[in-house]
Image 1 (cartoon, rainbow, N blue to C red):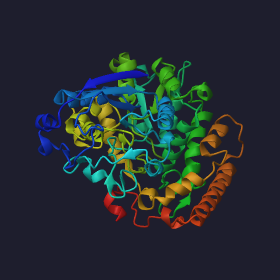
Image 2: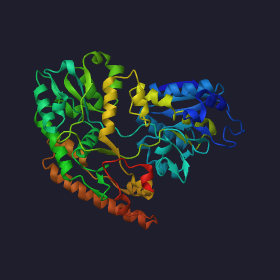
Image 3: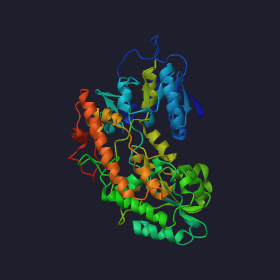
Image 4: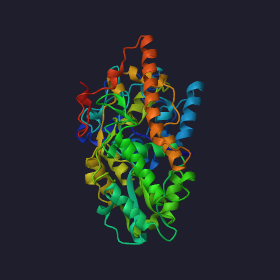
Length: 485
């Protein structure tokens, strides 16, 4: 766990330095109080900041805030995700919370955390009008009871199905277009598997990676879903033809001998290491791989490091769908300095931060112009981000239209084996009839949601299966905040 510290700036200096609203910087809202209990604006001591993100792009913004506000010190601690969740749970129980923190999904649904009083509104202290994030705010995701609590920084439309390759190590010349269809991808994978070097370092150890692999390849095959739910009907579709096709594609690659034989013991990090070491030709993962390569395996950059396109059944894949991206940073309800905290958070809604994200080769920022304007980034990274714009779309979020949906999801009990475990079992040959297993899971999870809806409704919530149905959704286009109206 790394600890980062920075010093801050006065609000007036911040707005002066950054050009105020003309530069897209949020303005401080007209308000009184906040700060420390004695009413002072800056207060004493450091502003405590905990997150589980990459400090390469976070630190520069905090340094800018502190340079413009010399009376403000920000002490940042960077945690692994699992440790952050534990630290926040302990801090919440013992009244030892930071002023600002990220909210990993394992902490719980945001709407539930808001209801339980974990956070206080950001919008009481800053106005985000005129920034790149202003039109990305969604009720039930970033806004609660009409108040802005947070805003997204990641674009959110980022699949993890890019084949990253080291061209100079391939045993033959490969035209990336030959690997765009599933059949073509299989052919190329078979041909480059030779001399004890496999086509793909496939991470089959953990269910999370397998779940994303299956769901996103099913999307490529035409499933219009998020989390296995087709929002045109509200039904679970884990046993639909696109999911069956995606399963067959993955299993065919395995039967072809394209996967590294240690797949059952590899997580994503292990797979990256084996790929970098030359044990496999393809690292099949997300847009952050160039950043990992630059930091950990820079020698690959001079060996033809490149990105191919996500394969689809017949070439270009159908869109992969994502819910609206969540808020990034949240003001703790325990903070005695919410205005200082808001100032620091709002500084991230700027062109400088978005440029820092691109330069760090992190997930793409919510402002696409930062990608277009970047000059010194790895070219495969930039090209892949442009590809993601073509291949990914925003989908609806039922909880944004009816917060009671979250109560239903929280009420639901897990069903096992789930689709990721079914895929894992099919790969290890511990599940023979995976098609029947998917059918049984789809039936069971549908019945479990029906039970949860009835239980939540009996407690007074106004919720039904219709809350998962969005007949106005066009899966070929982004579903935006305005579409919930």
